[in-house]
Every structure is written in structure tokens, then in C-alpha cells.
Length: 439
Image 1 (cartoon, rainbow, N blue to C red):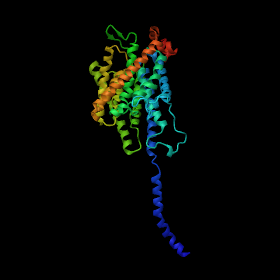
Image 2 (image 1 turned 180 degrees about the horizontal axis):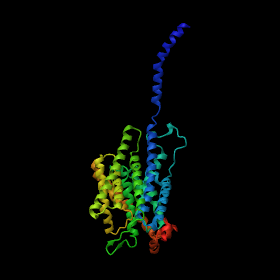
Image 3 (image 1 turned 135 degrees about the horizontal axis):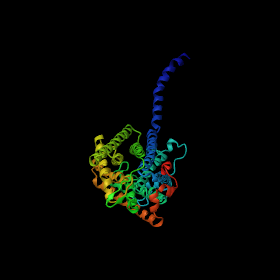
């Protein structure tokens, strides 16, 4: 008995290495769930930040239209987001990310394939641990789809009918955007070519701008906007709301660009997300300052609306590549976006293209610039130019066809009387500021 007691500690010590090796083997066999968890969290956080951009667009547009059209803009914005959510589930997500399910390889993905989420209580051994949950990925990507439609809303404000616009949103969010985005982000032909668009300067912003431009050309300018060779100013109803909307969009852009890192499970990934945040902020600031200074020089007074759009143009410009540049490079990229806005807004007016909120300079022209700027880092000018042209032609032509069909079938413009009286009462029967209407 004494011998057993004496030997027990020795036996225990001898067993320790074996137990340690067993624990190490068990730890080695356990899957690393951290990348899955943190990337899923990135998508969810980025997604709700980008969702907040829907509020930003609503406030920006409500502030930049006249008071008689504010309710219409707010209605359009909540409706377009809701339609985008349904269409992206029903068609868009799997059309944009077909995997091996291409109908026409590299060009057209799976049609009419609704998104299906993972089962409740998914076990680790049944999850795709190298990426993120389907729910978080779908939620994040949906926000980009809705953003594309929001761009169109502001350009066509104050003279378009509600229901034809919403029908266009069905086509844009369900088919046009997912198809062109699949060419790059879904592993399509532009991806194979080497085209690069990190978070969507062209795939989201310029695409929305092309759809808006097609609509503006077919719809025509507002009554009284252009008279005797001059542009008649039509000031917005609430610059405080427009400013609030810009800051909300600025905030949402951190999710837009930061979430597009698409990974947060390593030290390198999370550090890159922080780099993207800093570069995104610098580009916005540079765009705002450049627009502020330029309007002071050109017009002898700084212009708030130009400054707001300068910040947004800086954000759009950096979106194609927010990771590679230094802070100085981001300042240059965003600053050029500010220059674009100041000169492109009056250029469109000279062409009698009526863009109520300045979305075409901000999203289309600055989006093209930002996508071209990527080539300074990749050197692949041919792929960048090809992508810009391909997405521009596809989106503009298909959008124009849809607008023409809507114009022929239902009409897309309100009557002259309704436009003069305001769309709030004519189309909706309610006013945003009823206490001031009779004053």
C-alpha cells in the first residue's frame, strides 16, 4: 500500500505529457470558428451602417427639393428600399452570385432563384467556416442594391409619377444591377479580365448614375428650369435636412467601404478595415474642402449644396479603391471628386439635363473617375476602361428601354398642372409642411 502511495505521484507526472498531447490534439482537431464569426459580424455591422444611408438619401433629397414635393421623395425612398429588399431576395442575390449556376457563363446568372438562409441553430461542422453566414452576406449585399435605386430617385425628382418610378425600381434592383454586378463580384467576365472595383464606384454608383441619366433624358427638365438660354435656380426646401442627410451618408459609407473588405478574422483583415475607414474619411473631407474653396473662388461666395455634394463625390471617388492609397493619395482622389462636382453641375445645366440633387455628377462622373484611379495602383488601364464602358452601355441602354416602355404604356411624367401644384398633393394628397402651405 505504501508502495502504491509512493508511486502515485510518479505515475501522475508521467501521465501529464500524454494528457497534454491529447488536449493539443483535440484543440488541433477543433475548427477555427473565429474567421466565420468575425466576418459575419463585419457584414452585419457594415450592413446596418449602409442601411442608414437610406435615411441619408431620404433626408438629402427632402432637403434639396421644393417643399411641395417633399412627401413624394420620402415616399419614394421608403418604397424603393422595401422593393429592393423583396426583389433582391426573390431574384437578385443568386442572379448576382450564381456560383456554378451561370445560364450564360460569365454574363448571366441564375434567374428566379430565391435566397434561402441556413437552418436555425446551425452547427459549426455544417457552416462554411472560410467565409460568413448566408444571412449576413445577403443582408450586406442587399444594401448596395438599394443604394443603386436611391441614386435614381433624386435625379428624377419633382416631375415623375410614383408608380412608373417604382416599376422601374423593380427592374433595376431585380435584374439590371444584379446582372452587371455579377460580371465582377459574381466571378463573371470582368473579374476574369482583371477589372477592379473594391466597393462599387462603377458597379453601384455609376450604374445608378447611368440609370438616372437615361431617365432624365427621357423625362425632360422641370417646368421653368431653363428659360431663354439661362438656368433658373430652384432652391431646396430645407438645407438643414440636406446637411443632415450628407452626414448620415458619410457615416454609412464606413460600412459601405469597410464591409467590402469581406473578412475580419485576422489581424491583417481588421487592420485593413481600419485603413479603409481612415481613407474613406479623408476622401470625403477633401471633396468637401475643395468644393468649398472652388465655389468661393468662382462665385465669390461658398456654396453649401456644392460643398455637400463635394463630400459625397469624394466618397464615391474613393469607393473603387479605399484600401491601397495612403492618406495623401485618398486626399487627392477625393479632392478631384470635389472638382468634378463644381464643374459638372453647371455643365449639365448647359446641356439642359435637369438633375435635381446633383446625383449624376456625384455618382456617375465621380464614380468613373474613382474607377479609373484604381489603375494608378494596378496598372491595368485596359480592364478599368473596358469595365466602365461595358457597365455604362449595358445599364444606360437597358434602363432607357425600360423608361421608353413605361412612357409608352403608363406615362412617366405628371401633368403640367400637377407639377406646378406639387406632387405631394397631386400624387399623394398630403403635404410635408401643411401648416406653411396657406401662409
